[in-house]
Image 1 (spheres, one colour):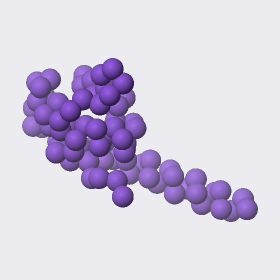
Image 2 (cartoon, one colour; image 1 turned 90 degrees about the vertical axis):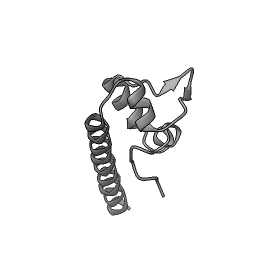
Image 3 (cartoon, rainbow, N blue to C red; image 1 turned 180 degrees about the vertical axis):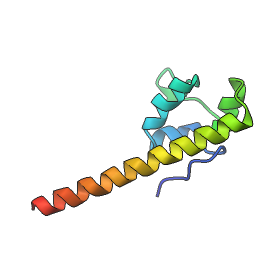
Image 4 (tube, helix red, strand yellow; image 1 turned 30 degrees about the vertical axis):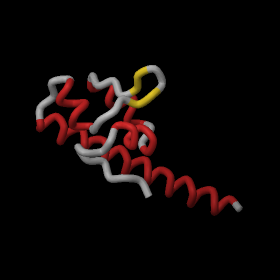
Amino acid sequence: MKPEITKDILIEDLVDNYSFSVRYLMEQGIRCIMCGEPIWGTLEEAAVEKGFSTEDIVRFVNEMTGMALEKEDDEKVSLEVDSKKR
């Protein structure tokens, strides 16, 4: 089971479980991969370090949660289509 995306999620867990988060955070100005390794700390710590507000962090969590739910729905549809082909 994947961990819930919250402000307290470790960057390493975020990257390991939600691959889209790397691109999303980079587009927001938060580099979460350095030298091929996730940075240490939580999403909140990384965002605060870059000068983001509490409201920004809430937006990040909400947007990534929505993206995760969309991906989950896409995977379910893909599985249903694959099972019908058999």
